Length: 217
Image 1 (cartoon, rainbow, N blue to C red):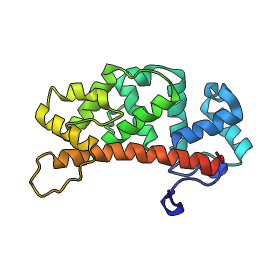
Image 2 (cartoon, rainbow, N blue to C red; image 1 turned 135 degrees about the vertical axis):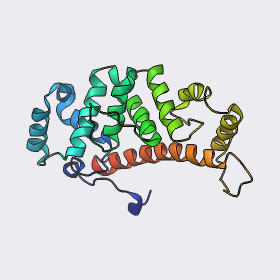
Image 3 (tube, helix red, strand yellow; image 1 turned 90 degrees about the vertical axis):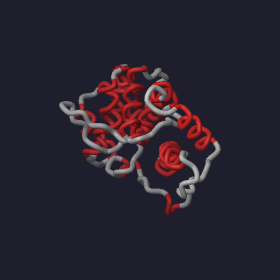
């Protein structure tokens, strides 16, 4: 990744205000400085300690990411209940969760959340959550769920043509380049599913680069 392709923070201080800071970088900075003690703090205590230690306030966007990450550390519900998973996915994608509304995240945000949550804890995500994500995919006209959303496919198979799902799976695995000329009916599906898989890979690369730049590893 070249410098021009890097869109993250360059210092520990700026990590708490930069809009593209990965949730796991924030978590790593806090655990390294405050150990797991920070997980038990009230939000106001957390923001005050960050101000004192890093000399900066925390942006609203990153406060939301930190709170969502803490929730995943401390309780099982985001891994088990679709409505709480939704709020984590919304938070990780940089939006404000509204607990009195349904906020359908994008397929990309769902995949990013699943990938991030799996790195926070070795906790299995429930069938209920994968059914919810399958509904999100269906709402966006996606018939095949790429990694890390693979468990959604058994739920999608109840609603989409299995031949199309199979052809899309092969196209994604083979990195088939869509031609959009009407000769392959799976082109649009391969395009949609590949974009989700590529987004997750991009965010993984960004995280590694952010750790390297901000922490020096």
